[in-house]
Image (tube, rainbow, N blue to C red; front, top):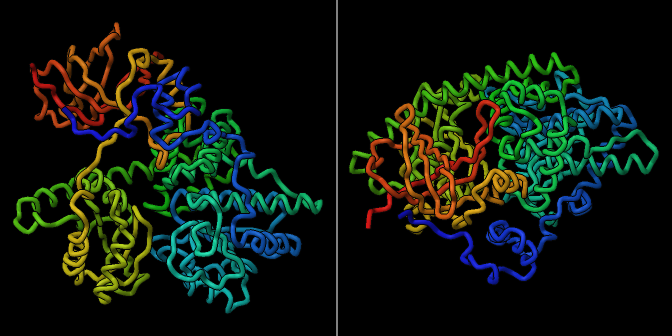
Length: 583
């Protein structure tokens, strides 16, 4: 049997909170799912826009809005400086769309990650001055650590507004306004806003101010398609506030009320907007937009989200599709090399006491290292850092290498890197990030020293942190194995990071099986009191581990709907499996 941890220990209806009893009478399973995610009152599931937290709670928002309002009225040149990921792209597109509608003179600049790195650097400010001669710079999804960039802009008399969401333990830069729910003195009740969420709040407050003053304004909520996309793609925690934002953005796309670029990207992916789910933002749309920043320049992605012309949207979406295919090819090659290195290292005596995977190759692509680190973390359940050569033209240092880190629950990866920097000041040139992801730059000659120092920090962490905990929402009732329940479950809430998609387990009888392409296990199963076979598939299964004599299996699975030749059928997406020994 599988070793699973129940997400919620109660399985009886009468043990659920009294406030969930009415829901439990309709669907005991759904009531259990909500209880397991901390929902004790149906009001917590409210999805009305009126349930959003007030913008006034955001420290600095009033000052930022006043500056933007004045800049629009005076015809000052505004420059949006974004980030090169999907959150940065949607933030930039949102600012451009709304400010333009309000009559602003506005343009945008997104750093080439390979030439300029991340954030409002002095180099980016100088490029902005040379190209756009701005009076006002607004950062989106970056800037909270950009002290030098702010100083460079102010030296030329440029006003700076920072909008960001990243964590910081330092004083905020002395910009004219800083809006970030995670800055040290902000009392906003949700710390889960991503960059596009912060931009939405600033613009919403600006629109209200201008509307009340009788000035040209815009209904910012019509652009929630961008907010939803950026929130899920950036793996924002789905607290109530974010669930409301994503719900309305998702609804808008399903109804065709969204930007041309999103529709064109869905066309490239062969997806029907009417059937879109929240997870598709992260698995379908996000990677295609992110491919621009990883493989080329994010300007392509932003222009795709900005265009009002369908043929232009299709052309740009095709470019993004091709970049994403290239990204997948490069990623596949790097993952294969990484797997071989890990396998080789596993046979060495020195590997037994390591609690991380840290790799570097001279020919690895800087734009893909984060994805590869994430895959390694998922496969081996260890904090993983993957390095590639840094851009020599920008750094002027042919010994610099850049790393991207991904972590597991219980290991705050940014803090761990900071601890290394404190103990060994010469090892790390730059670093930043948050609990689950971070980036850093070191010297190639310091690679081995960094590996040893990082593993030294990992050795101080309790053993149980490195034991992967697999959660389950428990068994399903026989009546839950239906298309109706699967569809109802998918639409019951916005599932994702911080509001985990439901996952179940149960013991099934094996009716038949097939191994597809030597790596996928397809099963036909029977469940007690269910009168029909249930299809199940386990992707990337180690076929050598399958017992061909298996009569029963304990399965950890998600409910899914399989569409084939215009027909729908229930399917279990297996996440883990164990053969049940015969009695």
